[in-house]
Image 1 (cartoon, rainbow, N blue to C red):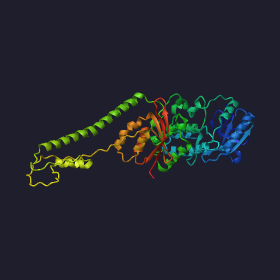
Image 2: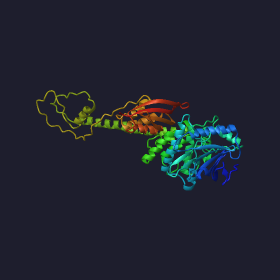
Image 3: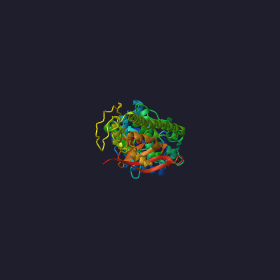
Image 4: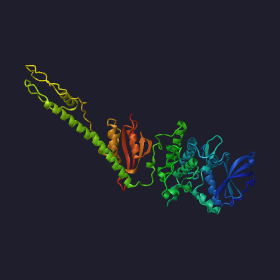
Length: 499
C-alpha cells in the first residue's frame, strides 16, 4: 500500500500534487519540480512502500537507460532516472489532457477519423519498437497508456518493464497482484507462454475495440476467452466493415495471422489521405469466412452443393436440350416442305452437295426454306412453268455454339478465370468445381506483382479473378491441405498483371 500523499515532498524537490495512476509496482504523480521554476512533471515512483535490493535496482537502472536511448516523436520517454533513499523514480513530461481512458469516459467512443489518426501515430511507435534491434516489446498497450496531446496528436507511454524485472519488483514489494487479463493475448495463457510483437498488436486490437464501443470485449477476460472457444466480435454500426475487419484481424487467436504494426500504419495513412479505408487492401476484402474459428457443420456444405448442382443442371437443360429440340423441329419443317412441293419433270436431277460447316450450312438451309433453285451444271432446254412453293417463315440463321474444354487441374481453372476469351457464363459454371478443391473455410493469400494483395475467402478471390483488373496470369506458390478432408486449407498465389 502506498505511503505517499498529496502535498508530500519527494526527493527533496518534488511537491506531489495529484496521483495520476497506481499499480502493483509503481505509481505516477503530477508534481511540481522546484528545480525547474515549479514546472509540472510526471513522476513515476517504483516500490514507494519498501526499499529495493541492490540487484533489483541495478536491473531497473539498465532497463530505464535502454528506454531513454530510444527516439520517436510518438513515444513519451523518461528524461531522468534516480534513486532516493532506496526508492527509484523516473521523471517524464507531464501531459495535461490525460489518457484516452479518461477521454473515453468524458466524451464517449471515437469516430473513424480519430481511430485512423491514433492508429497511424501509435502504430508508428509500435513499428519503431518492434523493428528495433533487438526488438522491444511495449507490454502495456492500453487506453490508459496512450495520452492525448494539446495539438490533438496521440503519444504512447514508455515501454513496460520486462517480465523478469516486473516479477522481481512484485516480490520486493510483497505484492501478489496479478496483471489484468483484459489486454492479454491468448498465447500468454498457453502451456508455454511467450510474449512477442503480435501480443502488442492484440492489446492494440482490444484498445481499438474499447475506444469504438466503450466496453471491453469478452467482458474483460482477454485472450483467455478465445482459448475457451469464444468468437471474435464485430464492431457495431455505424463503423465500417473495413475497420471492423481490421480490429478483428488484430484479435486473431493465431498470433501468426495478426497484422504487423507497419501494415496497420499503412492502412491508417491511406484513410487520412483519402477519407476512406482501402477497398481492396489487406482488410478491405477480409470477410467472416477468413476469420471463422468454429467449423461449419458438414451438412450445411452438402445442402449448399446439392442446391447449386440442381440449379446448374436446370440451366444446362434449358441451354442445350431445348436448343437441340428447336433445331430438330426446324429441320423437320424444311424436309416436309420439300417433300410436298411438286418438282418440274423436265428439270434434270439436282446434284446434292455434301454437308457444309458453320455459316455455309446455315445459308443452305435458309435457301431451301425460301424456295431458291440450286445452280445446275447444264442449263435446261425449256423454261419450266413456275412452281408454287409453300410459304415458310424464315428463321434466324443457326449459330454453332463454341465449346470450351474443362481444365484438368486447379491451376488450369484459375488461369481460365483470367482468360478474356472465355465467356463469363462459362466461368460461372466452373465455380462449383473450383470450390471442390477447397475446404469450407479455406483462405487464399494473394499477392499482385510481388506485392501483398490480401487474404480472401475462395468466393471473393474468384470474384477478383473475374474482374478486369485481376491480372493476366497466375501462379500457385504454396498449398496447405486439411489432413482430415484432404482439401486445401490455405493457398498462396501470385498474380501478374499485363505490362
